[in-house]
Length: 294
Image (cartoon, rainbow, N blue to C red; front, side, top):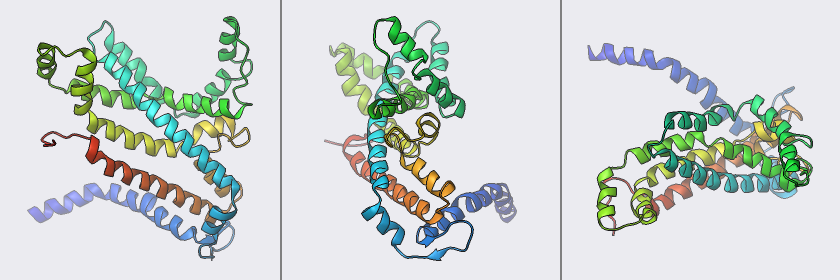
């Protein structure tokens, strides 16, 4: 009977296992092999060894520029997004009128934010005659060239990412609501203020959730594509030319699959290294239930 159950379980799991192998594991392995080849989709891959990686790190200024822009984007958006999501979650944790409506309203952008339609809308919002410049003109400010200036262009892409804070906010809100209220009551009796209570009780107890959101948001930020592609096409002067956009253009515009695979693997290694560093650092600031630390 146990053997039948095991077989039935494998049958139920088979769609996932087949999908994992066909759409994840095989492309993953194929891209690693292709990163060592010259492959243009029209002919068989030609093994070239480390040529693609040598070119990346020694002669490709576009790669260095794209890597720098990507790092600036990630290390700007992730902390700001987490801070803003936590701030809103703390507010929504209070018992206010219409609180369910506000929770839904703040969450909706995270569902819609990654869509092509929202990226197009964002482009029109920040156009020279868009709503944002109209609002600035209405209060006496000069219109801003959002897409013509490299700093402003990256800011608009960053702002779109920050606007999608809803998923992180919901996770923070769930963590805040799981905290034992008796801890706050004890702190209040001891005379602790709201800031001290938040810093010494709330923050340590939600550090596992902060860590989870940090990893998830970092991985997603490194893979950002829709915003730069639809809104700025990587410009001006490649100031929004993130690595995923570079990979896409190498693979599907220049048909250099080998070189695109090499860039993708460098991006993978960067994400992996930063993730390992985050896990290593978590032992010093993430507190789990049952931890005994001095």
